[in-house]
Length: 232
Image (cartoon, rainbow, N blue to C red; front, side, top):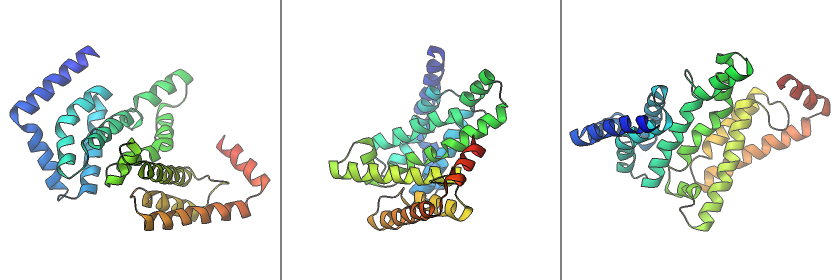
């Protein structure tokens, strides 16, 4: 770890002294046309590429010098910008094609390495949305407990609902096995809940409620057990 930090420190020093960090952050912003959401997407891709070859600490240190200035320039709070980077640096551990954590797990269990990695990635897909929740809008700072209490409560509740909807949509199970139409509605609702807006929250929350009620009314004990057995 000491060697990793030392090498990362040298890289950051070169980036800072040459002004390359500001140039690279400017390139990211220019590529996104100054659009925050696109900048976040490009930043996530850049972090994924860095995470392919570097451990979490080195990924964060280098990205903090390159990506954080781009996000802060577009109005993202400094804490949120660095948490975005740190979060994606951690998620690189489960991201294909070289997710180290699932590969280590497959080595211990004797399972297929590629299938284990893809399954881990599938189950963690909703987590890739979390950094967007506290960067696309100032109210998202409530997730980092850096906002008034009412904003914190509202943001946390809508984030939980959104992640539940995304997890159910991606994995195909809420109260029973979901149809493709139900999964599409759940994923769309989960994505809408990323942006703190009363109107969007009401629409998305209503959609999740409708799917939940419909599944409750149409579920059967036999179908539930069969679905769980198939997934087990």
